[in-house]
Image (tube, rainbow, N blue to C red):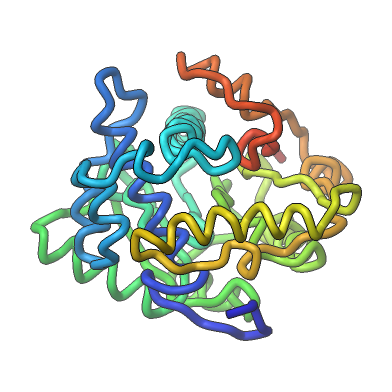
Length: 304
């Protein structure tokens, strides 16, 4: 089903299912012979969601070979990309708290488990923002697993398209304190104007010394939209033969998009970026074909 204004989801449908897909990739990456990440909660969270397709990926009963070798959406390559992405944001938080930041915000947190698996200094508060059903499911599941946060975790049930700032402040967020913000795997699911507005809101609520890390996706205005959509549908058809029927072309917003790094610079942030393939090389992972969607992203770090 195509996206609509105000649409909602759980972790087995629409945009929520992509959070489960990423968690499955993190589980696969964590089980690699020489893993660059360690997310012990990814696999049990995926199993708890109960989408058979992702459970089989996590358990190894469904492999990349079963899904074909389409270079655009090869699941093994995707797992490598998610490993590098996860490590990038892990390292960002480690460096932020080392600099003295004690307030963190995870936007569209999904099945992110950093509040449970990273070591946070005493006094750190981690806010997780997502839709109410997503927040409730993850909190309950991790409690049932006996998991305990390693910091003061505060779950904020809010839609980023609504007044999430008021909800964040009601949970105890202090805009006068330096904050480390991450937007991981988020911008492609927002229209360009919503992406820009989100960065504006982050800036307004960031004290000096705050930091932002984000995965910036390129605009697709110069790309053959019909061909791109058809390529996504081809992957969908292959995956649906294994029981997972989700049309990726209906979830993302294609077309022209403001460059997130440029926008942050214009808002007064000191910004740097690293392309996906350089990030993969940094962590000792194989490069992706430049035509792969995952390879098109740039990873931004900004300081105010």
